[in-house]
Structures are given as C-alpha cells and as structure tokens.
Length: 300
Picture 1: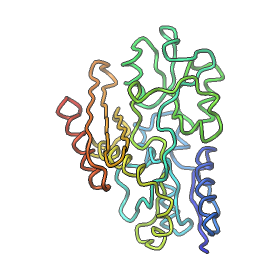
Picture 2: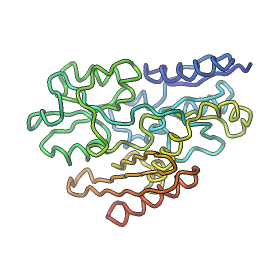
Picture 3: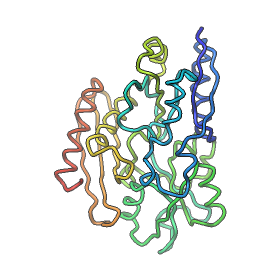
Picture 4: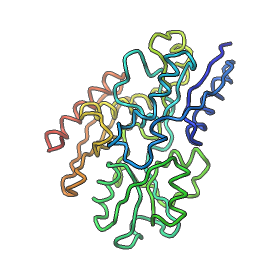
C-alpha cells in the first residue's frame, strides 16, 4: 500500500476529476488524500487566457506542490496542460476519454440553428469563436470566463442566449440534461485533448510512473498525442484558434485539424490525414504532418 496526495484545483469539476482518480487508486489498495489549490487561472476572470499567460496558469501552482513534495501527483483536464511540460515533469498517463465534443447550452433555444440573428453566444475559446462564425456569421460572440458553474449561472442570469461548453464537464457533473445540442466534429472540431484526463508527476518518480501505468488508456493516449503534436508544431498557444481531433480504429489513427483567424471568418483552413497507431511516436509524426498541411494551406 502507498500513501498518495493528489494536487487539484478547487472547482467542482476539478474536484470531481481528482476524486475519480482517488477512487481508482483506492480500489488498487492505496491510501489517497486531496490537496485543493487555487490557481492563477482561477483567480483572473476579467481577461481572456490568451492575454494573461495561457492555460498553463491552471497548472503551475500544482507543479510547485509536486516540486516541494506536498503532493505526489496532479490531475488535470488535458486541454489545460501546456504542450511542453517544464523540465522535471512528465505525464504519467492519459486516462480514458469522456465525450470530446462541444455542447450548446441554452434556456430558450434547442439548437444553434434555432438562435435568432444577432443572438449572443458566450465563449472565450478562440477555436469555438472561429468555428461558430463559420457556421453562423450573424451571431454575436461574447467573452465568457469562469468555472463551469459560473458560466452556467451567467447564462441563467440572462447575459447570453446560449453558451458553448465541453460536453465532458457537463456529463461528469451530472449536468447532461442542460445540453440542448451536441455538435458533431464536422460542425465543431474539438480542441486538442478535450475530454481527456491526465496525471502529472515529477519525472524522477520512477516508482510512481509504474504505479500509475495501469490507469492509462492506450487509445485515448494515442489520439491526444496526435492532437497535441499539431498544437505543438503550430506554436502551442491558447491564443491560437486551433482545433485538432483524432480517433483510433483498430491499428489506424485518423486526425483532423482546423485553424482560423478571429478577424477573418473566411480564413478557416482544414487538414486531415491517417496513419498507423502502433505507438506514441507514430501519433506525433501524424500530428506533425497535419500541422504541415495547415501551414501549407495558409495557417500561421
């Protein structure tokens, strides 16, 4: 039996994710406790992440806890994890992915098509912004920050006609009934890593890496590795309106990506490719190839 401490953000969704990992580890005979933390990403709500340091703001404090030995592992939404980890850290595993798609939530309208011209839709994701504009250029897209509960409250208070959220978070918190429409990947290509949970550790914790290996889901890890390779090759910034989504079918990995310009709805470019899915190196190679396609089509 091993005693483990999990560092986690204190939002309801982050705590659900940490508790999920805690339960899995306890079933394997380990003693586990949680270390709740507030990150800079949770504190800064009046500006977009792209203007204040990116999604790494959600993980830095947790990494400090790992460095100082106050925690053994950190549980993250993979979408919030920078493409390149700081020296001394490693992803121990990527767990089985939840629904990776985006969802429309609205109190009055049942679909994107039903929204009237000029309707206000909330999102702070540049990816969602450019994809929404490609589907409905007549909509008014406005910034929406905060944890999931905060975003839903702002919708319910009448600040928006609809908001777009990750389906995974809603489902994990038992809020699936709030979903009015789930976008197909053809409509709204997901973000790299969306719906996947990752466990981060110090890279020198070899025993811990071995202990966590059984929690990994190989197909999910392959898919998100290809997606994150696209983002890394394109610059890896959350200020970039980039989508990447991969699926594994047998020994084949299918990867699609899209890049847009927030100031030019006509600039949306797409790319796709397929290749073998034998290991993470092949997944990364496929992602690099799709990024090259995007650049050749005008993405930058």
